[in-house]
Amino acid sequence: MRDSTPSLSVSRRGFIVGTGSIVGLGLLGRTGASAAPVPAPIPNGARVPVLVIGTGYGGSVAALRLAQAGVDVHMVEMGMTWDTPGSDGKIFSGMRSPDYRAYWLRTRTKQPLSNFLGFPIDKDVPKYTGILDAEDFGGILVYQGRGVGGGSLVNGGMAVTPKRSRFSAILPSVNADEMYNVYYPRANSGLGVNEIDRAWFDTTDCYQYARVGRKHAQRSGFEFVYVPNVYDFNYMKQEAAGAVPKSALNAEILYGNNYGKKSLQKTYLAQAKATGRVAISAQHRVTSVSPASGGGYTVAIEQIDTGGNVVATKTVTAARVFFAAGSVGTSKLLVKLKATGALPNLNGEIGKGWGDNGNVMVGRANHLWDPTGSLQSGMPTGGIDNWDAGGAFAEVAPLPTGIETYASFYLSITNTPHRAEFSWNASAGRADLNWQTAWKQTSIDMAKSIFDKINSKEGTIYRTDLFGSYKIWGDHLTYHPLGGAVLNKATDNYGRLHGHPGLYAIDGSLIPGNTSVNPFVTITALAERNIEKIIATDL
View 1 (cartoon, helix red, strand yellow):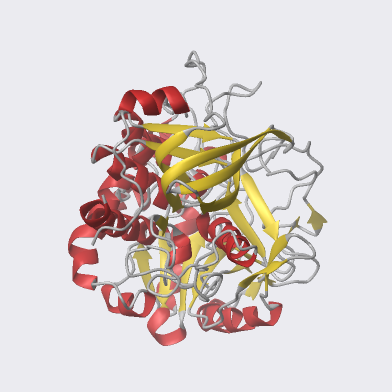
View 2: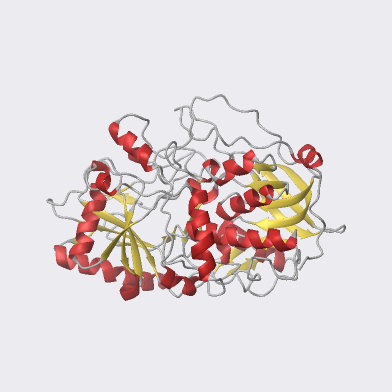
């Protein structure tokens, strides 16, 4: 059924004149290349067929498929383009030496591991629109990517498709046959997912830490699973051979990856650019969306500089708007728009169903006969699966300090039932999240179903120096925010927001709090499913 929003048929010439040419994305990862001309950002008063808020997984899928269907798209991104090398010749800073590029508008780093060997490791940095946002909601610290490519810039690249048997618990209103036969394969292809050479994994120094994790898991009767990744493992082999600049083997993970990782700028966004129908305005933050008098939607935007200061305010009109600012960004914006009356017809499910994917981190101190290696790949490729028995999947994560630590480190995803809600705090002018710190105990208990058993079997203990003084569990954070505009509740079954035809959510906000594994492949596959339906029925 067609809705009442204005037609998307706007001339390509008129669109390009009104919005500027396409942001050059091809230079990412290629230092020393001459920069392409910087395109003009979206001007005040522009009229566009489609505006996509955010350039992460869902937004990139939407932009590419709409462009391939002949629709011109403008994307706005709060973060930077990340296409210009710094004084060190690299676009991104390393994990061991975070600098001004590392954090989003912070004056001090907020590293997931705050301590090491008894010493605090955070340091002062200049305030800058860096790549990693550590957003504190009081009860939980939420890590998010900032820049063209969103979360793909800062994650570990673990491209996990959840087991089929668990899918109905994740997205009960979605046809699992379609997802596993069509959309998961499409997402994996589009993302450039590849698998590690098992023979190389078994011999290379950089995965000694993972082999120790595998041995300990299997000795305790747990299933060890090899996990695909979007990092180019052939490039990693060349890194190990000393034939190319090091990236994964140079502790590049949290603050961007300079070479081998196939982030969205190299996959979906590169393809979108190649259509000639997608433009991107970086350092642009959407503050309001409301129905326009002549149809479509009026979108208020702030342009910011690298200090986070507003340098321009703009109003543009879009026939359709896709909310793809990530679970937190989309949720915060939608609850504001509903509460302030900008989008009064959004339903009561907006802001609800938010979860942390059950994230909890932990380290174990191993014996001297189980060294984990001084060289560790920053891209994890294995996990321990105890979901059915204990409610936990644990990524065997790197601890790439550059020295031998005799430590195994893990990021767990757990089957926690707890869900929080975003609400609009009018007096403070912000969205609040009612997360309760006590909820993390459920995740700890589920993670303990793996690690207590391994420690008992191996005669090992938990590390107590990574998250503060004598603190075992990293229970203060999440890397995997999900929910807030849950599919088939806040939206229909394809992400159309209720009450306002022509508005869509198409990111991790659609997924109710948990995916049982790392979530970005599921976010991408769901976006592929939804945009295919939207193009077929709404355009």
